[in-house]
Image (tube, rainbow, N blue to C red; front, side, top):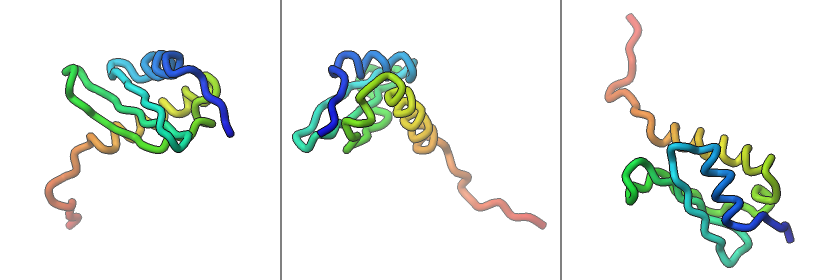
Length: 89
């Protein structure tokens, strides 16, 4: 079974790398974690990721990688797609 850093350290590291977003981490009974990211407005949830394995939270280097993945996912889910596909004449 993988060990992880304490939740307050995980949240602090993720917060440092995901500013201006606030994060909330919740351990799950299956040895995984849920991370929720909130935007400028206190109650506006921007992204929820379920099933983050504890080995992704065992040290600062892994958490920095996780923060990068979360930022990519955040931008991917927030990006606006064009209403119609581009046509080339």
